[in-house]
Length: 232
Image (tube, rainbow, N blue to C red; front, side, top):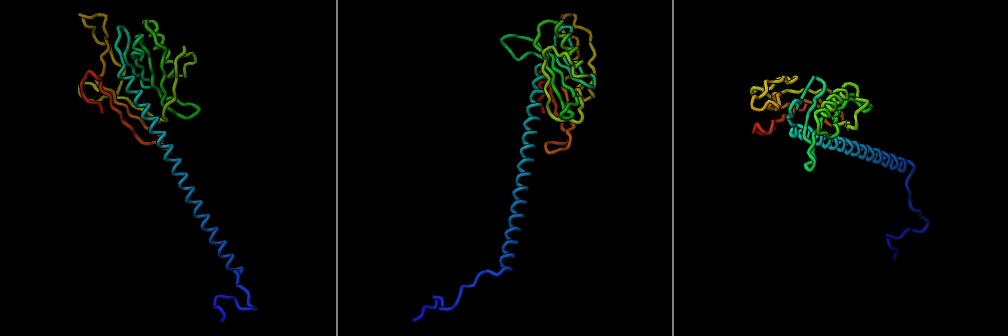
């Protein structure tokens, strides 16, 4: 008895026609194109997320350094602890080495470079005399104007891209545009002490450029630790 599953003598098996092959190739090509676009979109999204994450980490480190510089500000006789001229912020701060007490001058400014306009930080070498402070103070001002070709061993670090920045001081229970702090009458009981009226707080406003990382306006408030108010 003939098995129905067996091929009858004299017959041949039927293959794919040319049209069926062309349709199959077209479908495979379409699937490959869709898959490639999906992978490309995933790759772009991964790259953008990485750029944003890197930008966030850089900004966090920058703001941490900004806060550390303000926290370490020190008032010395016949020196200025903080000075803003509309272009550069200069600070006199304690050095980080507790075993060998010293003082530094740091400066923050917005400057253009090969990698675009960035917020930059300048730091002098440690010093211990008032003459060295004056030299570092002047170098910081020169650096903000032309890059300071003679930095005296100081460091210059490019930080985050910034379009513009503003500073405000907290004085008399209100925020006012930052300006050069005026000297006040010295304390008769301590004539050699500081004669600069320190602000109770400093507000930083950064305008970040549009891009794949961060953008928009960022505001950061710092309150002098001795004031006792919580920082935001």
